[in-house]
Image (cartoon, rainbow, N blue to C red):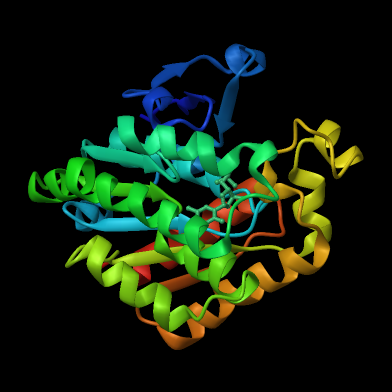
Length: 268
Ligand code: TYD
């Protein structure tokens, strides 16, 4: 007898790793209009997920320019992996630890825009990362969990390196001190053009580029975005085994399908 379709819903939470749900439940199709819920099409819910076991004990980074949609994809993959019974440690940068969240406040405070030297900025990101690696990432990998990171050193290479002007080789050297052996197994780059990225950013914030509520990383404008994007593409070109570039211009279901296809090929 044909099993009835199950319609799967996951909660949409703020990006903070602390808010990503531990479980997800099934609801009737009537519930799809519930606020804050995302509807996953039945075919995806029924997919064979055995391959997801290959993610145990791996370290995967989601990265890309502001407005790339990576955080939405992060939440979707996170729910899918957990539903397959795999433990996940979710981290986001900058932040993710008690120390790191304090560094985050300094880095993203718009009133610091003119104060901070680019090298100081790079070192602050890296300092937060060193704490994150020691306190959360290494123990999770050792426990056989999947570590899913929203941004990592690939962000520093793109933002402070290619776009900010610091030699990427210098950043990699600092990375060797901060990360030691803990480099990602895979960096997924969500690639978007500026027009798509702008549409995805909060429209209230987009209206006035210098609005004080806009975080200071997002007020740098089009040329900066273009360089950031190029920074990610350069990294992927130089290290094609470790990087997976996803065309993230389409709607989120299409992008998620691309992500899954790419992951299956890369994680074996
Ligand atoms: P955040 O509010 O966390 O947004 P999101 O990750 O969803 O874009 O902002 C993080 C900002 O910090 C973002 O503009 C990228 C920037 N950033 C760097 O410039 N260098 C880094 O090393 C990291 C981790 C982030």
